[in-house]
Image (cartoon, rainbow, N blue to C red):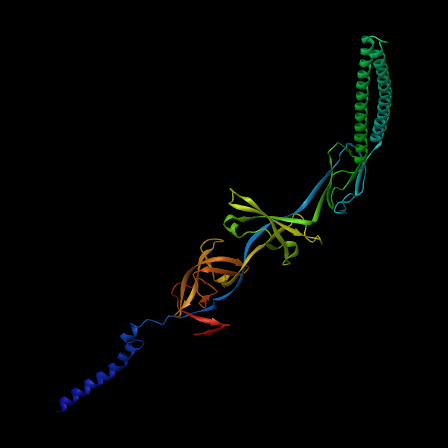
Length: 390
């Protein structure tokens, strides 16, 4: 009995000694069921915007350079030495204002010579008139003598021939007078052309010659630009041609004036589509009485075509474009707590806003900031006013 009790006590001691080692082996060990349970997926916080219908101005984007409707290069009508100029580059001139003068000495002499030639021609005409009157009276006398038998037929015929010759000489003298008058008119015009006047109002863009320069006929003196009446020539894609009309309002800005808007109206639409770029040339007329705009400025804007009463509008940051400047792409919308990619098609754009033609419904929540972590099916939680809404 004592021996059996001793054996039991020895086994109990061994079991108690093994307990710390067994406990140490079990530390950090998880149940098998816990090892098979996946970790919870973290939800990605995203800012969203509820899609709403709003009024949208349908426009056609345009860009191009402004140009004056009146650009005139003033040239000399006659040759000669430039005696004086009466303008400065950049200065304003009025129509008919004296701009420059050519030395007129030679043209004054030519006028005097043409006037003297006209006097000679007129004297010759007067002499021919006297001779014609005399020849006609002699013919009348010859007619009377022929009826009475006082002269022969031969003498009568001589009188008739003298009248014809006098008439011819008179017509010749008249032609010479006309020729002399024309020569005098040309000389007088050349003398007047020595005074170069502005054919139109504007500002002097460039001066080509200085006093003392010997100019040939047709040489340029200066260029006048009228900035009060400008045009914007631009190209519009042919697929937008159906919405273009003359009289439509165009609004544009220039780098010079920043965000300040100027307006004009469509004045002409080319009847032909350009084959190299499949675009149509459009001319926009602009009134510029204050001359804030200048010919040569670059302008960018849009033609206001019509207004869409209920357009679905999203921020540009929400759109993922398939190609640069394209109208097809997609957005992410929130559906049952997950991000879902939705293909959409654009109908227009303005600054940071896009008009979606197809692919979205009103009141859908669109994710407005698309990051690399956002994928189709990603679990998300909506942020509104920087606060999370589960």
